[in-house]
Length: 147
Image (tube, rainbow, N blue to C red; front, top):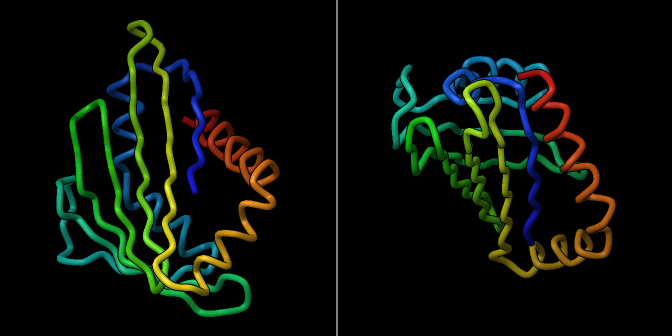
């Protein structure tokens, strides 16, 4: 199942990329939302191979996932791969300079079930795809606005 969104940001591409690679800010935000997060190997600078372990509640159950930065092309592209129990996912962020002071950010989230129960979860999400897509695009828009 795939979700995607594009937003134009009135900020130079280098500044947008700098904000997107401020992983400490994202870690603090996740912790405030109840996610237990732990950075593996304590790497401070954004490099391929950075990884996090996360524990969170979803649909009344405790879940775990490992997220790794698998592709980094400064300042254009980032790819994160997540492996969870039953569900794998990929998160792509592409930046395109529109002018010296504006950037287009494209975000794609791709979720793939690996177990029968995960397939049922994804199937129920497909029934609500229109609503979930609107919510995804709204979150990307809100995030772009803060940049």
